[in-house]
Length: 424
Image (cartoon, rainbow, N blue to C red; front, top):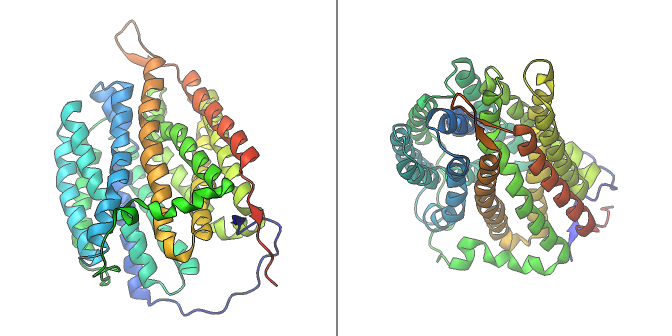
């Protein structure tokens, strides 16, 4: 039976039993690991759309497909994590090799100006990078005594690394050049060396046989028999389609309308993510999963509406407000969903359940979203008298706003998990 583990009408539990904190040195190294992990991506990922569109002259669909490279890798990477990282090699060594190879590929991608070459290089890079995200999380969980209390403190250095990277790129005005990719490539090589200093983490499933059902998370399909969980999966897939427009085109949008130091200002998103992540343990027991996800979806609608209404000069505060909503958008709508999946799945299939929802959202949802957002941007682009390509961004942002609103209404009407019984 599907139950909301945080129904919103329960009393917040009292003080938890004291748990010994992990040693300071490993925790500091784990925090530095998170900082470098997301510094690498934050250096170039947000500004890639501006470089591709304004400098290389790529069309919207080509830009969207380049952003779908990560989604393609998210579909394929469970095979690697399940068969190699979990069974044969220590996690820190796998991380080192992946970042080393990824850094070399990204350096090559920075020198590629044709879509036919750049796109497969980006796919190859993300086949290396995407597995490192769950692996860094798994390593942190392995070495933390109290994951609930300690993991947010370690993981919060991830968005901090993204913020530092974005500020550097924005202030140096590198958004229209391949230099951010080269900086990220060098940082990836540095991360590879640092990984060899991380605490030893042996493969958790050494000696076990890998099955296709395990790698794809198909053991979790039994959860789909519950109507509420099935609607959650459908809504999660659908909402990932319109939200991909932000990742692929927000920086291009801000630069095209004349916002200065756009990359630096976009780091406000990660600032709000830090705050929302730290506040999540307070909000979740009070609001419940259903209301948290609905608020997150509503934040996405508002964000796109603010983008549609905002502009440079006097209207720029609307744009900054839209960026600041990121914490509520991401943490409430997506991160809460992962917690919900963890609570609904039996302990024996929790890993499979997380793999399945990641395949549906980060893989299939973002893949469709990259293509669809590219088609949308192309449909409302036009070449001016001077030969410069511009876009009707007001209309472009209204489309995902309306799409998310429709998904929100569907989710509100169909997702009704039974409240969990209160704990005495």
